[in-house]
Amino acid sequence: MANPYTGKPDRAFWKRAVSTRHYSQLSDLAKPIDGFLDARIATAGSCFAQHIGRYLRKNGLNYMDHEPAPEILSPKSADRLGYGVYSCRYGNIYTSRQLVQLFDEAFGKRKPVDGIWQKGERFYDALRPGIEPDGFVSPEAVQALRRFHLSKVRRMFRKLDIFVFTLGLTECWVSTRDGTAYPIAPGVIAGSYTPQDYEFVNLRHRDIMDDLIRFRAALKEINPQARILFTVSPVPLAATATDNHVLVATTYSKSVLRAVAGEMTDEFDDVHYFPSYEVITGQPTRHAFYEPDLRSVAAAGVAEVMRHLLPEDAVPQRPQKAKGKRRRLYADEADVGYEHCEEGLLAEAAGE
Amino acid sequence: MIKVFGDSHANRISKLGTIPEGFEVFGSHGQNVLSFRLTEQDGGLHIFADNWEGVPPLDVTLLPSDLNVLSGPFHSSPISRNDTWRRHCHWTLHEAFPKLSPVSDAVMDAVVDDRLAAMFRLIKACQNMDIPIVVIEAPLIRRTESTFRGIEEEVLVDTDRRYRDTVRARLAGAGVPVIATPPETNDGRFTKDEFGAEIATDVHHGNRDYVKLAIESVVAFAEAHGYC
Image 1: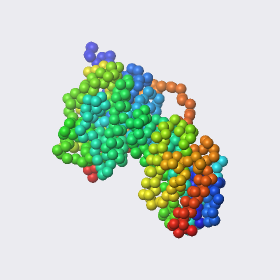
Image 2 (image 1 turned 135 degrees about the vertical axis):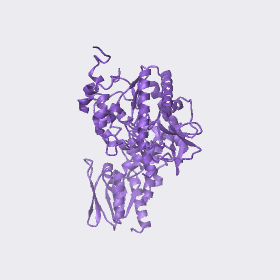
Image 3 (image 1 turned 180 degrees about the horizontal axis):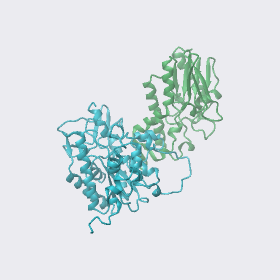
Image 4 (image 1 turned 60 degrees about the vertical axis):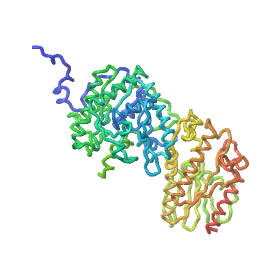
């Protein structure tokens, strides 16, 4: 007797696709993305997205680096200053609100009223406070380097073929004056928290959908061929500003983000989803890819994610460039870990 | 005893200078002050490095009874003439050179900290053992065609100045005196031709006249601080 599941492939059945397989034998988790190997790819998002960019660059894909490090910097110093972490030097973009606001600012549609934070005698770009760990010497320096940065962001959005964005958080802190969403709460890296100037927002499903639909439309307007690849970060919240337990808050955040990513993928043909979240958090790995803190993803986990993103036999075999004088600009994956995770500072700032 | 030791600028002093009594010079190569072996020896600190073929190794023992003059931290030529500055400039120059990508002050801070890491290890070791150590500044670079290599003059001068200012600030923070490059040898931007090395392609070493003034500066410092 026929039923709707008859004839479905193995991947559709838990027993065949999951129960009886070791995680390393999982396959066919996502449909390959047409033209991925030759596409100009830009990355952004929460800290887990850093691994994706590094992996694409290392494997010779057409990874965009629009703010390359000055060659004079050592790879370690370049990394510390946020070079080579993403396609532009925007630091972590944890929320959909940050993404849409960055796009709008780059194209002159908004200007944050409170974009510079201070700590002692140093000044921080409040929209990317992690890129200069010691801050800038003056507000003028923040502004000059932000103007340049935005010009590169503009160019990146105009030129890219695929924009890989890792959704990280729903919780964020925003300015009460103009709604600017920050990557970190004021007062953690710089600035100072005052309830009249800043408020906590936990973005809801509809907020994130609205943001991403708006972002997609704006992107398509300046770059009609652009496609988007969403992933969801498997890294739990370091801290929650809600009254919930952080485990409950994490589940809420990730569920909402995963649902939005799925809905965006269903809604638009040019939006795709890559299941890095499932690779790390799914039952097959029994959470073995988390470090003892149960938050950081171990290197083996990152490698497993990348195996699905870019199977070994799909890695382009490009001719090796002649070994010349040019030395490598960036540190290897193993050298950097999770150094760029402003959110990770939350617990520390709270005295944990 | 006054011991001048370190990079190729110390080597020039050794080769071209009339070395006064009570003076010893241990010249070597710039690479040998970036990485070396440091061991305690006979109540002093022994430094050894042979990172560059064809140049005498750096091989000197610093003693608490000596005035030890390190040439190395101000070896700015590899920094200010680096290809980076064909594509980047300090953010304050970006308006004048819009095709260059601006960098923040943190870039020079990082360059200096990376470059001086070993030298600061040496300075700290000297201070821990009460071994007097001061630093002698290298000559400014020269204004020749081979200086620029596609770098805008203003960018190069600005970079060289920022490098030296940053080094000076780091040394001051560590309590290390600096014997400045003799002011009459430069115009504030470049070493004057009459004090530059005889070979046109050598853009950063001093000549015999420069070395003479440099030795006089060291002697003056030593006299002022009771070392001779």
